[in-house]
Amino acid sequence: MTTERQLRFWLIGFVLLIVALYFLRGILLPFVAGMAVAYFLDPLCDRIEKMGCSRTWATTIVTALFLLAVAALAAVLLPPLETQLVDFFGALPTYIQAVTAKLGPILKALRSHLPASAAPSMSDVTGYLGRIAGWGADTVGSLLSGGLALANLVSLIFITPIVTFYLLRDWDKITMKIDLWLPRDHADEIRVQLHEIDRTLAGFARGQATVCLCLALYYGLGLSLIGLDFGLALGLIAGVLSFIPFVGSFLALIGSIGLALAQFGTWQGVAMVVALCAVGQVIEGNFLTPKLVGDRVRLHPVWVIFALLAGGALFGFVGLLLAVPVAAVCGVLTRYSLGRYLGSRIYRGENPPADSGN
Image 1 (cartoon, rainbow, N blue to C red):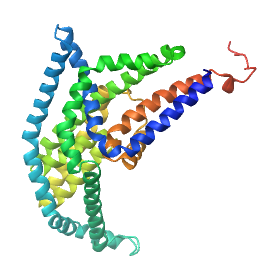
Image 2 (cartoon, helix red, strand yellow; image 1 turned 60 degrees about the horizontal axis):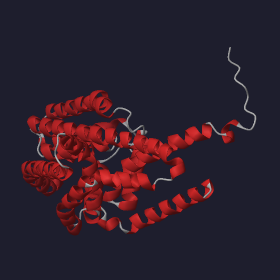
Image 3 (cartoon, helix red, strand yellow; image 1 turned 135 degrees about the vertical axis):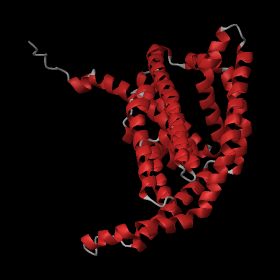
Image 4 (cartoon, helix red, strand yellow; image 1 turned 90 degrees about the horizontal axis):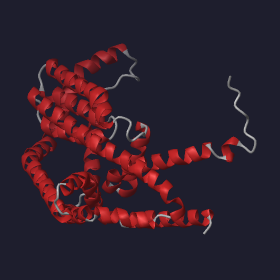
């Protein structure tokens, strides 16, 4: 088979895979989650296996410990988180009124120094806040209905551990089988790229997960210690959303300032919130992300944001889970293709000019 026919075969197979995933996107969540957890836990399972334990027992131990850790974390965090979210949405109209009242003198002073057409009015601010609140509620509602509806939530709870166990137990067999399916003429070259993809994904996933955990603890505990209502819920959500560049920090800043304006009677509380968020941004940008993630994924933040938006629009919550890994794979393949192009005659021409170095 010629190279052109091989390329055509794999392109057709890739297109068919994408089409199948699109039509099956409604049931993919537990399988994608199970695959992600198995990929994350495989190194630990390998270490236990090297200690003399069988693969089945190593998988059982690792899966059980992971489920116990998740259950303990959920038992500790979910009850207060649920209470704070319910109370927050119940008090949201009151908070909007308090924020608009607090901003009233500032807007009056602003209107006195700006043309009437350029300065915002209280009705404008109230309308903006109402639209932001409505947009947030609609976004949460669409996310829940699209990715975490009741059926998907039940399957996530009961099917994901089963998928994780079997994938983790047979991980080495699966990788060996895939290796046997590689085109023999290009197997070595494909293995190099797969190794690069694995290194990129492993470094990014584990590093970014650690960053999100650290930021969730920082914002959640910090805002709670300041005395901000719903600080724990806001901090945890901001930390989880930190896998999207700038979104977690922006949410923590805007949300905490809005709550501080509504709750505290003086500007001192608002200043404390702003200082905490500023320190969090410095820690994330200068210590956590460079040390734990670094340039492993080698993707520009704009490309990451685009990948997340595109994945969410096409596949919902599953697309959000797959967006950055798929973008990282595309980045590895793109850099490989670019390297091949720069070394080809298409780039250099039939008669490339000789180097004229001294």
